[in-house]
View 1 (cartoon, rainbow over the protein chains, first blue to last red):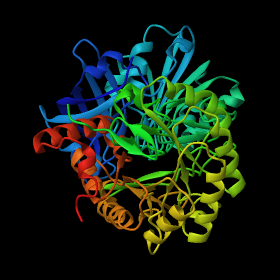
View 2: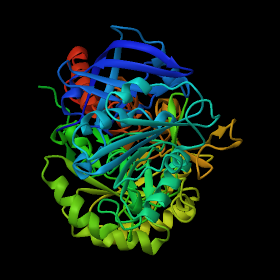
View 3: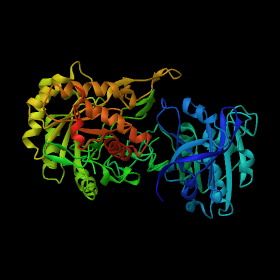
Length: 260
Length: 301
C-alpha cells in the first residue's frame, strides 16, 4: 500500500445539513482505503495552499469511489462545497492507520461519533456488521439535523444524543450510554476533544480499550513536517520524544497511550 | 544531455535541486513519492545533541499563499539520527547535507564532532530558526555571535559547512560577510520570516508559540532579493530557498546568484515538487539552448 497524489473526479455532492456536505469522488485511492483513514484534499485556489485532511466516510471498492462528509470550516472547504459532478479534485492518500477492526470481532462494541467526527464511524460500522457480538452506535449531534442517521441504521443499533434535546437523549453520548444502560468491551470513537477526553476517562473506569481518532492542524499529511503531533505516554519510536505524528502514527490511538 | 551539475565547496551535485531543511524529514516519508536518486541533495531536518520535544500544538497554520510553522525543531537527537537516518540516506545516489541545531555553542560543536566521522557530504548550521527560545536565532541575528559560532564549528567539521542565514535582520549582507570571514564554505538563505496569525473568533494566537516562521510562495520575492544582495556581497556559493514551487522559481534564484536551490514548504503542497523542478530545469535548458546550468548562475547583474 503506497500513498499517492492524484486527480479524482467528483461523482456526486449534496448538502445534507447546515454547513455539512456529502461528496462521493471517483479515485483509485478507494482500492486500499480502510475505515478510520483519511485523505488530504487540495483547494484549487492557490492562496489556500495546504491540503485539508478529511476522514473517509464510506468506501466503495467495486466502483473505486470514496465518500467524504465534511463541514465547511473556512475558505478551502467552502471551495469544495461548490464542486459538482465531473469536477476535478486533487487528493492525496490514503493516509493514517485506521481503526483496528480485528480487535472488535466477537465483542460488544461501541461506535461513537460526535459532530463532524460522525462520518468515519460509518464505514467502520459497515465493515464490522455481522462480525461483532453486538454493535451499538451512539452519535452526538448539536440539534435535530441528524446527518447520516439512515446510513447507520442499516448496520447497527443506533442511539442519538442531541445537545438541545430535540431528538433522543438530551446531552452528550455518555449521557445516552448511561440512560440506555449500554455496555461494551471495546470502544471506537471520533469527535471533539472534550468528548474524547470524557471517553478516555470512561474507558479507564470501565477498564476497556478505547480507540480514538484525533485531529490537529497538519501541513504535509505524510509524517515529514512534524506539525500534527500528540503527546504520548511513552517515548514513541519515531520521534524519540513523547510526540507521535497524528497523520502517520495515528489518527487512531488507544486512548490510554495519549495525553489529551 | 545538458550538464546540470553544480559544485559547492568541492562537492559535486548532479543537479542544483535540494530539499529545504525541516520540510522533508530525512527523506523517508517522501521516498514514496520521489526517487531520491534524482535529487542533487537531501538536506535533513535539524538535529541536536539530544532529543528535542519541540513546541506545543497547533504548530502550523495556513496563511495567504504560504504557511506559518512553529515546530520548535523537534528531533530525535544525533545518536538516533546517526543510527537510523544516515544509513537510510546512504542507500541513494544523492548528496547528504545534515542540518545541525543547538542552544549553545557547545551543543552545536557536539553534533558537528559526531557527524565529522559520518559518511555525509556537508553540514548546514541552523543559526536562524525563529521558533526556539534559546540558541538558534540568537546566533543568526548578531554578526559577532555568528562569526564566533562559525569559527567553532569550522574547527571541528571535517566536511564543508553551510551557515543558514535568517532574513529577520536589518542587513543580511552583514551576516553573510561575518560567516564568510569566519570560514563558512557556503551559505543558505533564507530561513523563514517571523510572522503571526490571530484567530479572530477565539481572540487568540493561531499558533501555540504565538509567532512562527512564514514560508511558501508568499515569501519568494523577499528571498530572491536577499540571494541577489548576498551574492553581490560575498564570494562563497549560495543555496537559495524561499517559496520555490517550480523550475521557473528555482531559475530565478539561480539567476539572482544561487548555485543550489532548495524546495521547502511546497513539498507539503505537492510531494512531487522536487522531481518536477529537476525536470523543468532540464526542459528550460533544452528550450533555451543552455549547455551548462552553471552558465546562468548570477547572470542577472
